[in-house]
Length: 212
Image (cartoon, rainbow, N blue to C red; front, side, top):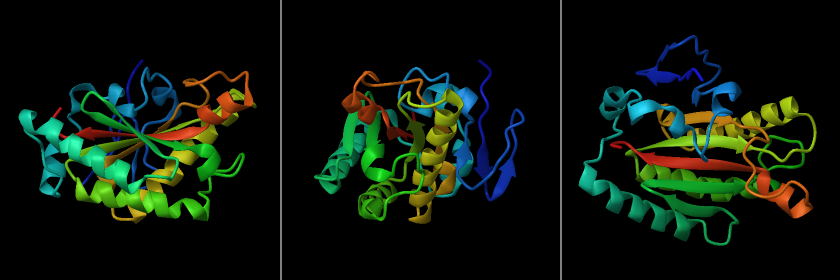
């Protein structure tokens, strides 16, 4: 699959491979994001080289190889402490952190509008991301298989954008953020049960160190 990616450098929108910007955070369209084998968009980007020089110039530093593990350990511990009791799960995959945000507690059914009660937990996510600035954040929306696949694709993208826009509004530097949706393509549970479908309705943040 051909990969499209977008970068915003020093406030200028640079179009690569016919990628079109529609708002501040970077966007990888549903077709490209649908090819993901894992939980984040990072697998689509070769070499982790996405505007690194420009991001470092804007205060997003690179990590030396030996420092990555400790840096991500501390960030994971702070995220878990700040998000305790919110329903948001933080797990580790190699040097990446996966933050799973359950859609049923964040959004109303068939809606991409964040519930006001969830602003606080997302504020905690944003505050931690602002503390650990040497990372990229991939925001990926997922749905269950209820309804047409094309509708679910659009809903997954809209929910991811809502989360990305919110953390951007709380100070997370926009060029660090990539957005995509995979619709119903990557279930983590069976869609044959109500509880499984609930697990599949989610937004996942993959936090990746600059330096991989």
